[in-house]
Amino acid sequence: MDGGISTPISNPNKVLIKTKDLFPWNGQTMLFNRKTLLKYIVLFLLGFGLVMSFLPFVKSMNPPKNSIDKWQVEIAASNLDYGELKKFDNEIWVYRRTPEQIEWLETYEPVKTQPYILERSWSEKFDGNFRSKDKEFFVFKTWESRGRVFVREHGNWVFCGDLIYHGGAIELSNGLVYEGVISCSFGRQSINFENHRFTYDVAGISSNEYIMPLAVPYYEINRKGNIVVGPKP
Image 1 (cartoon, rainbow, N blue to C red):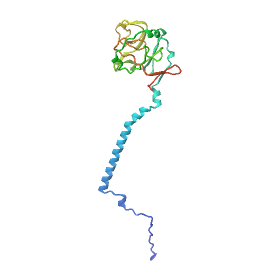
Image 2: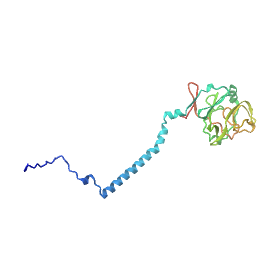
Image 3: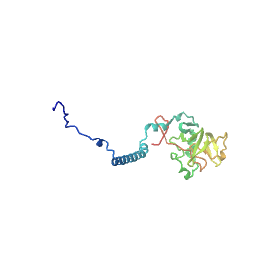
Image 4: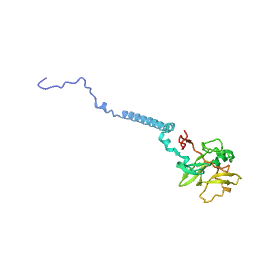
């Protein structure tokens, strides 16, 4: 105390910080900060791009269950009558063979499709003439656009019009007699089987060696006896 005037006592724990230390905005510091910021931005973009490039691969290794269920189609095929061809969801068709057709398929020799044609087919492979997991049911898939049916042919989809089943003994131009056929209508009311290449037996094999067989998708038969069509596990 001196002459009644108090003198503030400095706090020994207090640190004096100069304004220039808080805001060191000189030219050299600004240049350094911009370079550092640019470097981190580039590294972030590279890392982000790398992660995004691997994301589809990781997802494909472990697809979500709901996406698999979305593509599954369950069909109570036993509700079909013998000799009935019916289309279900996702352009899946099922034909129920008659006992006579099952016996016929056991012994007849189908037309041998050219090997280079078969190489382009994504159809499931089966031993024997039936091309199915159950002798009674033939399952195959088409593609549909604006109500018009297309069948797979030489790597492309070919307009078929509609698929129609014709029962009984059908004689074709190659001298074969089929026990019922499945054929493309091409929008016509009647079909001349003598010159009709898109005519298939009840196992989906064409009467013409240069026509691709009807494509069989992957499917299983569950405990209820229903056909479940879905992605191959």
